[in-house]
Image 1 (cartoon, one colour):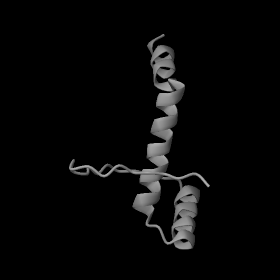
Image 2 (cartoon, one colour):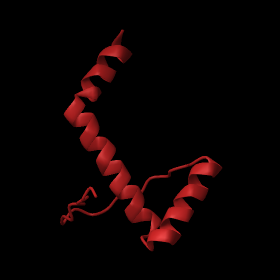
Image 3 (cartoon, one colour):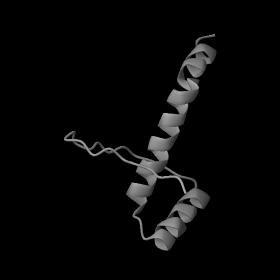
Image 4 (cartoon, helix red, strand yellow):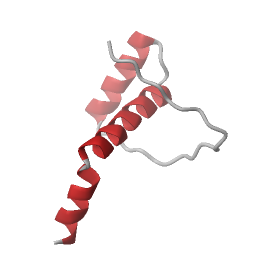
Length: 69
């Protein structure tokens, strides 16, 4: 099982609106109920994971190149 770590810092949290399609919101609700982990924590883990994967794959640079054409 993959271990996830969310770094807790002294930095204040920021909020932003996140609109999900109904099926994703329902799935998130279901996962939160099954795991007893709140949706904010699950979302933070998922976002941290995709950010790390983008950095590792250097996909951010590729996306910048594609969008600059």
